[in-house]
Length: 142
Image (cartoon, rainbow, N blue to C red; front, side, top):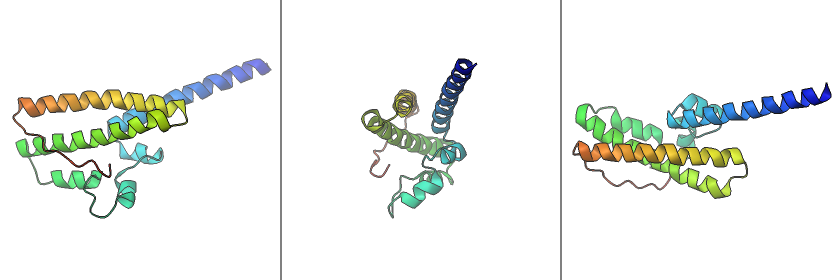
């Protein structure tokens, strides 16, 4: 009976870790601020508190720059902002590869690198296909 209880506990723990990891990947890739906030990740609110004055890389600033745009102007700006956002996540994930203590964080960083690199490549393809020119962004502060 004791061995069965331990086995059930281990299985439950592993299932919980898998669910938490999958939830984190989905939250980051879908920019789900409520889930990200619960997990302690930067959201508009927490990022705004930590960002230096004049920092225009926050999600709130990115969203504000899109609000009065439509059509091609919106699409072009959206792609530029999302590439910058994804590149910031990639930069953070690269740090996690060598600095994180827990293997779950290292695995999450690999998932982020893979998913968001593919999305950047896709968006850069759209920029080329649709005749948008990508303006370079300063990634300082992301």
